[in-house]
Amino acid sequence: MRLLITYSSVVCSPRKSGTVLQWIGLSTLEPRGDEDFFHTWWRRAARRAGVEARKGLNSIVILTAWYIWKHRNRVVFDGVQSSPQVLMRDIKDEAHCWVLAGARRLGRLLQ
Image (tube, rainbow, N blue to C red):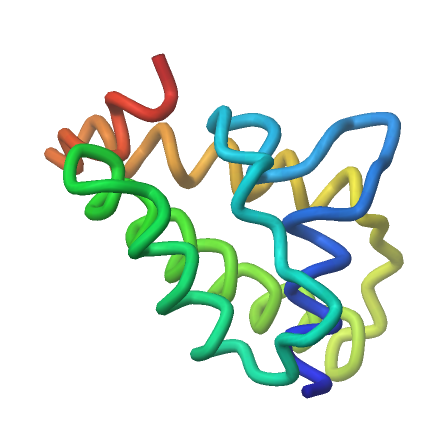
């Protein structure tokens, strides 16, 4: 439950900088209130995304979860001051690197 809440706040919560799902044009896949587990939401979102967007969605889900983890570690262990806007910027930058490295389906979502 805690990971879904953290993930939901980065992926779905309205902010000045927007959200990951808004950025890739899939805001309709936001977690619902009855989804208590990250994997439950992810499985539902992947089904609803459709065949064309599924691989790109999976890439952005993995990338975002990884960056939440890295962000948390920097704050907790390194004492770094950060914000959701910095996290979002880092996710966007890394997503573009993944596209340059060959993540074609992710690239289609970013167009």
